[in-house]
Length: 82
Image 1: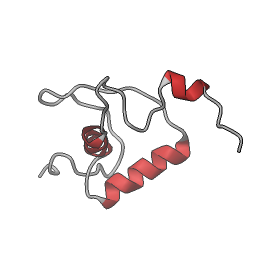
Image 2: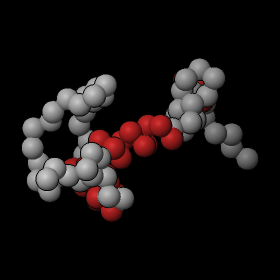
Image 3: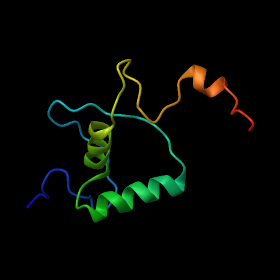
Image 4: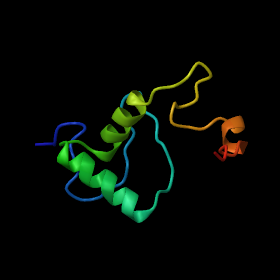
């Protein structure tokens, strides 16, 4: 019997395209990968399902920029000394 979709994989295996989903490629630091893996496992889902939930929950401003991201102007401004 196959495991339910979106649940953790007991061991790594080659990715297989499913449905209308698309692959995301990227690299993260080993400690962040482990954090994501443990969070997904603890939530009873795969890393892919976990990433889908994180992306879906990311709030965007009117320009499509994540609210947590600094704008180009904000990153150049220095804090005022008091």
